[in-house]
Length: 307
Image (tube, rainbow, N blue to C red; front, side, top):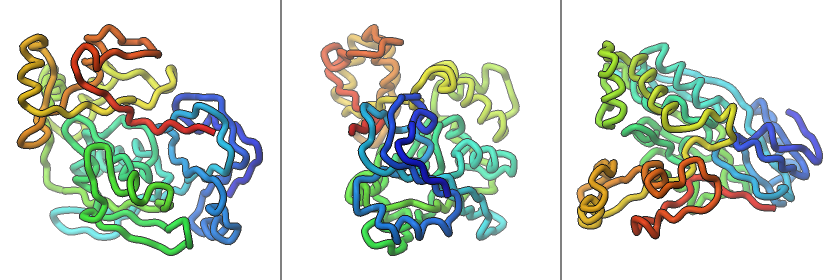
């Protein structure tokens, strides 16, 4: 465990914002978690930080930041059809995805390239290219910050929605996630419904394999999103807006090339990035008139953190 006062948060957020916190506690092993409760860390202002890929600091944080840096990827159950894997909250999401690709465990290859740590994945219900992490999460484990009691919440009770979960609603700031348990398939299957991904995969006439699908996802991501090692970002800043089919049909009259994908029986998902491009705001860092041009409101995925 590492503890520091008046610490810069610049190395701990993918936007590279120069902000500080009054105290930073970095948890590297599960047996260090008791320190947080014995010292009543959660009785005062606190912020739990994973990979810092979904937070935009607009000011210094006046409180304690708990940085989860625990490691561990362990198979806890296995059958001929699937495998159950327990992953520590501090594991990089990218490392876990590559672990699954290397072993041909199917289900998360479309989610390669998403920045952040595994412990944050259920909070946002991260998703990309036709796949959401809720499809492979078995349960989420951790502790309630109020009294340190443990919890194990099964998938059905996580209230997963589009970039949403119980951890962003009734349990926001009330839990410390320590482990996420995933169930991956050993049977070869792919999600190739996303048009750009399918086109990228077949453009090079590659054999369809878990590794080639992942490579195609990376190529598509790189063509649309900035390299966070060069330009501070969170990957995707805005949620892709959801509109009803009747409204979409009217939009398509004036904008026939709008990208859209089925969301449910009555709604379709638009591409926030395309809307921003068509509004003339690609690469611009301030302002947006997407609502004026399209009548569509785009909402940030990113959590904006003040003082």
